[in-house]
Every structure is written in structure tokens, then in C-alpha cells.
Amino acid sequence: MSNTSTDSTTNNYLMESNLTESDEPEQFSHEKVEKEKEKEKENENENEDEASNDRPEDIGEELATITSKNLGDAYLVTFDGGDDDREDASRLSKFHKWMIVGIISTGSLCVTCISSSWSLVSEEVMAHFHISREVSTLGISLYIWGLGTGGMFLSPISEFHGRKMVYIMGISLTLAFEFLTAFSSNIGGVLFGRFVSGFAGSSFMSVASGSFSDLFKARKGSKGDANKELALALVLYSVSPFVGPGIGPLISGFVSEHIYYKWTFYILIIWSGVLLIMVILFVPETYEPVLLVKKAKRLRKETGDDRYYAPLEKTKITLYESVVVSSRRPFLLIFRDNMTMALCFYTGFTLAIVYMFFVAFPYIFSTVYHFSLQAQGMSFLGLIAGMLLTSLLTPPLIARNYNRLLARHGGVSKPEFRFVPLMAGVFIVPIGLFIIAWTSYPHVHWIGPIMGSAVYGVGTILVFNGIFAYTVEAYRLYAASAMATNSFVRSVMAGIFPLFGVQMYEGMGIQWATSLLAFFACALIPIPFVFYKYGESLRAKSPYAWSD
Image (cartoon, rainbow, N blue to C red; front, top):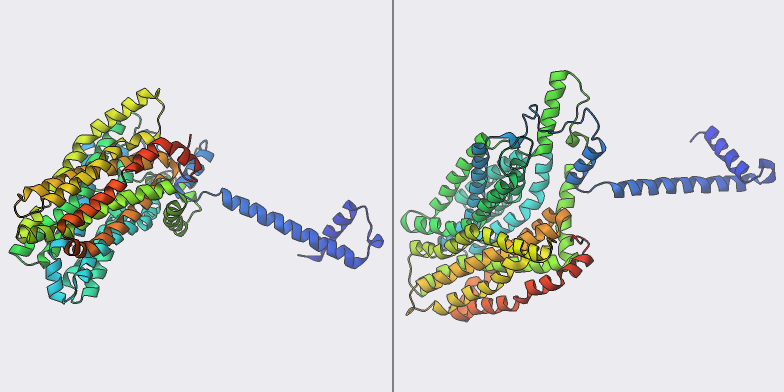
């Protein structure tokens, strides 16, 4: 600061104090001035802190803020439903849209199929690398852990660079590290390849629903009900993450018995490669903020006017900040929201048993029924059938019941109404486990435990339907973070259970090991009923849940 400005500050201060320089010692005067400077700096810092606190943490929030503040700006580029919106993904033909849905759903089917395909090559891997069962089972666990954590880091990338880049990057890395899994000469490389393949493959789990929302949105002049089309797309897509794990053992069981176990990996490499080509050729960019940037660039080029801009070009949030926020908030939800933790634990427990089946079923059907590898893979058909039929047939019934509850409460919606499928599922899950437990005898037909797994599959889908629907509605603003939290918790649990599954079945016996899981599931039955009754008051106490 210059001497002139210092003198000016001194004079102003003395005038405000009704003093002159001769009335006050020079040292005292300078002390007063320094204190004033410190106060000014403190005020500036406080203003900066307030500005940073007002700044949105999420890029979606900031884009909405930029758009709303500049709505009257003639140079703000938006999609207004006119003929000039050639970049808008919702203008694609119906055939092209459903082709995209099919490709993305197939991608989800592929990456989840890879997770469980290890189950019936595990014995071959143990013999090939001379490792223990626990180390071999890490091939399942590490992949699932990668699948659960990858979405928290890959989703923010799609918000800056678009959905297509994330799909291409994800399936390319999955493909590359599948080669490492297939051709590595040491078990460390194989397991590392499994983890990174899962991490990258999570792109099809974390970005898909956003792509569907981009495609099926209401716009001027559009025909058909966009919401119904979106709901149908989500129903079809939701089948793949559950059916995929059941298909994995079918492939690996057939391949291991008739060809060579590594051909399981080769087949999945071919599938991933075809999927990559399909994404490159037929899946365009669909994320609106990125498409608006393309439109702004086109307008600037066509008009020669550089004043045209898209909201994404004005954002101040960096990719690093977005990744940090997206990965931090799920952990805050776990530790600061009891409802989230309880619901995540229940979905984690339910999915963990599914993944335990991938080590338990080969044990059950080889020791009790002496099934071949191919037949062991086919033992998962009951689980697949239960999940597939429930995913396709129950949505209309669930919607009808929800509308009935709405009518009964005068049209006032509550997130707790979404718990009805969960209330049914919590009873069906232990029933399925008890059937598996007490039909697994040599003198009982092998169809018994397979039917039990089908019943368990029905319960699993109902549990996930109820919890997912509640989470999206109850945590509106933080729905993406709440779903990421759920994905993380259930993936951690699903990766842990296979590590002790066979040991538990060998130590306790098939009947009591499965019954232990069923008894624990019975102990969790009250959860949805407690939340249905007290959910509204619990939401009011939550820092994240929506409370009207």
C-alpha cells in the first residue's frame, strides 16, 4: 500500500474520531489505523467465505443457477424445441433411441456377467496358480468392489465431458484389463485386472439412467408420453444388473467342462469388444449441457459472433471439485443418516447372499447331487427366472398399489408409500432361503433348492424396487449421492460374503448355514414397517432427506 493511501486512511480515521493529529500521539494514531486495516481484511475474508458457501457444490446445481440468472440473455444457448435444436438427443428417432437403450442395457448385462463368471473357473485358477480358495475367491470380490466404487468417480466425468466419453473410456479399460486377466502369468496381475475391469465397467451402472433421462424427455411437438417411455426403458434396463450375474456361471460352467477355462475370459473379451464397437458407432452424446456447448460453437461459427455461450462454458466448478464432492457426500450419508445406513445394509445383505450363491451353489450341487460343471452353471436358472419375471411383471402391480395409497390419502404423496414392495420382499427372502436349506438333501429332487433360489430372486427384486424407489423420492436433491451410497455399501458386502461362504457351509453344513442367513433375514423384517410408521419424523431429522 502506498504512503498516500496510508495518510488518507489516517486522516479519515481522525476526522471520524473528532481528533486532529496534534491532539493524539503519532504512535497511537498508527495503532488505530492498523486495527482498522485488520478489521477491513477480516470483513473481506468473511465476504469471501460467504461467497464460497453460497457457491453450489454440484455442477448440476451451478448449471441450473447460471441458466436461471441469464434466462433473458439473447446469447444464452438453450434447447427451445425449435428447428435449430439439431443437437438435441431427444429429437432422435424412436428406433435409434431404443437401440441406444438396448446397447446400454447389454453393456450392463456384460459387466455384471463378468463379475460372476469367475465362480466356475475358480477351481481351475486354484490349480493353475497353486493358490488357496480364499485367494481365488478374491477374483469375485475385487471385481465387485471395483464395480461399487467406480461410479462415484466416473459419474462426475460425464457431467463435464458427456456420457459417450465415459462409456467408451469405461468399456475400453474393461476390455484392456480383461486381457490382463486372461493372459497374465501371475495371480497378482490377474486379480489387479479383475479390480480395474470392475472399476471401469461401472460406467454402465452409474451413467445409464442419466442417458435414458436425456433421451426420453418431453419437448414441443413430440408424440407419445415421454415419462411412460422413460419408465419402460428403466424397467428393461433394471433387469440386466440382476440377470447378468446369473448368466456368468452358465457361460463359465459350459466352457470349463467342454473347452478350457480361459475361454471364459476370451468370450467375455469378444463380447466387450463388440460392445465397444456398438457404442462408438450407434450411441451418440446425449448429455444436454455438453450438447449445448456444441450448439454454441456452431452458432459462433455460423454467425461469427463470439457472444453465444452455453451454461457449461461459464461454470467455475472444476472436475476435481466435482469428483471430491461426489465421492465425499455418500460417506456423509452413511455416517450422518441412520435411515440410509439401515436401507443400504439391507440391500447389501440381500445382494451379498446372491454373490455367496456363486460359491455356495457349486458346493451344494457338486456335493449333494454330484452335478457336473455345466449342470452347476445351469443351477442358477431358478435365480435368473425369479428375478427376470419379477422385474418384468411387478411394475404395473406396484404402480397400481401406489395409486391406491395416493387416493386413500387424498392425493398426498409420501415417500413411505414406496415401501410396500419391500414389505412383501422381506418375507419372501427368508422363505426362499429356508426352501434352499431344507430341500438340499440327496433324497429330495434337485429342483427343490432351484425353486428356493427362484423364490429368493423374487424377494430380492421386490426389496430393491422398494428401497430404490424410496431413496429417489425421499432424497430428491441428493438422490444420486444416496444411490451411490447404496451401490458402495452393497458392493462392499457382496464382495465380503463369498470369502467365507464355502468355509461356513463346510463347517455348519448346508442346512444350518443357509438357515443362519434365513434367521438373520427374519430379524430384519421389522425394518420397513418401522420406517413406514416413523419415516416422516425420521426424515425431518435427516440433513439430507426431503421433508415437506
